[in-house]
View 1 (cartoon, rainbow, N blue to C red):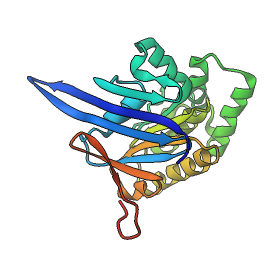
View 2: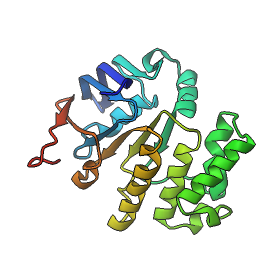
View 3: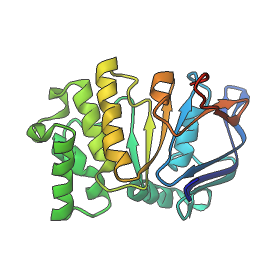
View 4: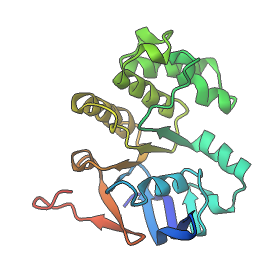
Length: 234
């Protein structure tokens, strides 16, 4: 296995729902190697997105450790976690989350602006990524002029522009038709595999999960690996 990039050690997370507590993760542990693709497969509400939020520093665990690279996220305050996300993580969501008042190019450049790295060389990287996702000619367009698939391709370029260590993708094809979803997954294959970027992806689709190096599901608050054998694909 490659050197660890992500480590979860005995992570617990629960939420209050009215007058009761719902336990989502209980003593969950996980290691993701550098360049590895780990997909979380399972029904809605089982805790997949919560796990993604913990790895991305959006949520903090109730107990246990979450380590990404050299950062122990459970020991960081909220501002430090925000800076960590901006510098080290690329996010791709189901509903694109593009800023409607910014052009396509401005949306892609936003992560660089947030970390104060808007150099000419990185501006060139943004234009190159738009070329690679087939949208260079739409750089001056606004998101509402693009199809859903085009918006998701912009979101992929935005997630990669600052060369993150890790991409976190939450149902990135869930709002797309099958053909467009396949195109987005092909972009991941071409742009992430080539650079050795690790990815943790949440999906409910067993077809999407076939692209993973490892597939996990959440059962009774713990993480279980789904065996990858010729007769037992997820």
